[in-house]
Image (tube, rainbow, N blue to C red; front, top):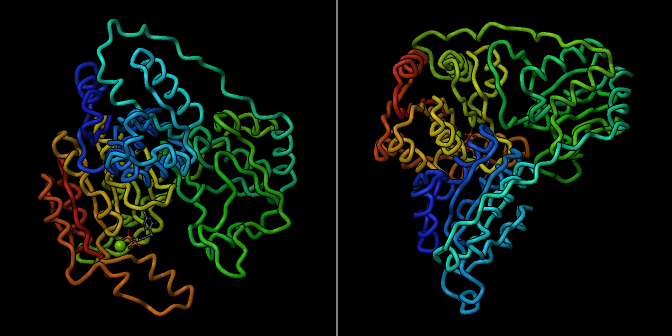
Length: 487
Ligand SMILES: Cc1ncc(C[n+]2csc(CCOP(=O)(O)OP(=O)(O)O)c2C)c(N)n1
Ligand SMILES: [Mg+2]
């Protein structure tokens, strides 16, 4: 349980310290919610403990990311009892309204005898909904002693729902008619599911694409390459323009992230039907299997490619050099966190040629979660390679401190392009003049290495392709590598 507690959580901290799961201290709520999001993705459940409404407010944007990543996440708060709230004490804040704002169930636990069973039910609710559940524990009630702890109760388990048969048939018929796009997300991107998709593509001529920001899946050599749908609508629209139909498994329909006057936000051709096959907690991989069966399509291995070529040692660190070095730095069994943003646009595709690993991406769009995601993965005992853009790295760098005191094995590459490059690209696309004062993280420049060292991490700076590869190879413990890119 990643915790940033206050007075109203001290009894809970004590209970966790005594009975587990072990509480792990973080120095900002975003580090707690991001780390818990990673464990939710990797383990099937993650938990954070935050201080009342203000603590939840501080950590909320990564709870939003967890919702977009479909992460089963428990966010626990020690909350004032109703009687105390009527006095309007200083920290009173409508935590239930924050839960509503991100569409998360809000559970109130005010009887310690019921706490264990209610928490178990909240956990299975998070797992079945595949999303965050906010649990407010009455701080005064939690301070009471229990005569006897409540007996553990079995949690109601139910089978995952079946998709309506009509929808599977409709999907098979859209794919069978040819020239369809099969857009995959969630568990449909796991390697065995990919092989089913390759078989469907071979049988129907469908084009297989991956959602823009996958949340988590096993990856690397042997998984098979699937191109991602690009983030920029200008690039994504052409990829879908020839589609006669769109069949979606494990991902919502593809829309532009932002609206602009007079611009169609739906990225697919207006006359192409769109069908999402899965619903709720359906196992997307099993669903693809049934779709493949309906089409008589056997599973097929994907195509394999060579890793992108290493650049000359003295070369500047551009997208090609960065991608080549990162792909080679992946070790068997790593968790690779990708928040690289503009500096390595082809990284996802290139990672299909890396050593087998677990890929963790960034679906929610609230930036800066990469280091916290790395913390969550690293405290599971996994080696982590996190690639994070410099602007985003400043949102919750505190996660490095917890990584260091937990003795984790994590390499964090900070992509120092000196600013918010994506916003400069968007300014250009919108015909707006450059406003460097609002997009450059300069004057003074940030001392990323100094910041990392102040939290107990090792830190080095790499200015060439050769230095980047060498520092990646030497990294051990918590190592931050500041990759100096062209700005
Ligand atoms: C919580 C949050 N605040 C602000 C933004 C807007 N935003 C999107 S990208 C970005 C900056 C990205 O800079 P960096 O992380 O360095 O990546 P680069 O574009 O340079 O590759 C900002 C501020 C956001 N998406 N989420
Ligand atoms: Mg940047």
